[in-house]
Image (cartoon, rainbow, N blue to C red; front, side, top):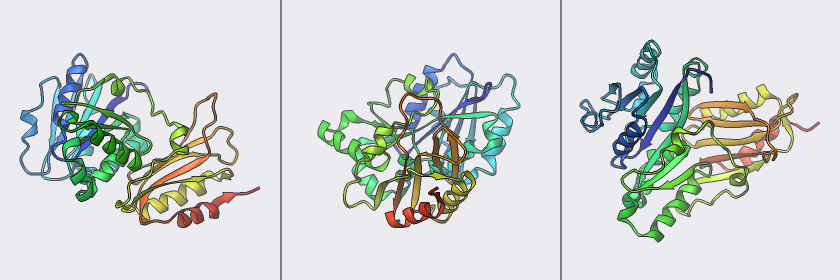
Length: 314
């Protein structure tokens, strides 16, 4: 994280999951900081802005469409305005529309020009425990919201029985084995989990035990071992092309590889249509050399062929 960058939080989740309640809690937790909010409604008129507590310094509204469709328009203009302010905000909270593609939204904060000024601290997804079973069957946007998130909050746990919450958590773990999962009522939980997080911690244990997605869902998580090295540019180009070609089928890539001429393992991860390769910090335990693909209707053999074509065996 660069100095003097604006900490950015993306709040996603399907309609009625409790995003505005969560936003109010975060604003209360951070009330001594300079906070800006971007509010997005899928419609011409916003009603949520009247529900947001006034623990913010400025509110921007993007209406009449999904925020991820405004990345090259209104949102970019808002981000440009924010960096002109003096003093700059400490936090930027983006409450996305309930039908937004969170991965596509997050990808703008992985652009080099944006990363100079903004640090994407976390993507947080709320799911409505009471309606989860129906929503996950009917709403494809909810899949992408879960897959794109660093933390998934199972909300409204007071309205369902404990065994059902366990089932919901298993399904979420199968869809996104990388995410931390927290249970809550009224969108309340330890907000320090979000605001004190420096960088995403990626556990190798998650790669070794990728939870199965229940039968009936076409989503799958596949872990592929990659013990040999890759050439950086070849790997980047090949995976980037794969993401663009199969964007509606390939939801996320994450894992560790070794690159030619580099000693430390490199973290590979995709966010929306953006791929990044990041050198790992020193660690006592070496991460497993493995890539996990979260996808539907793409077979393991096809992914293995893509990797084998660019693997350096010498």
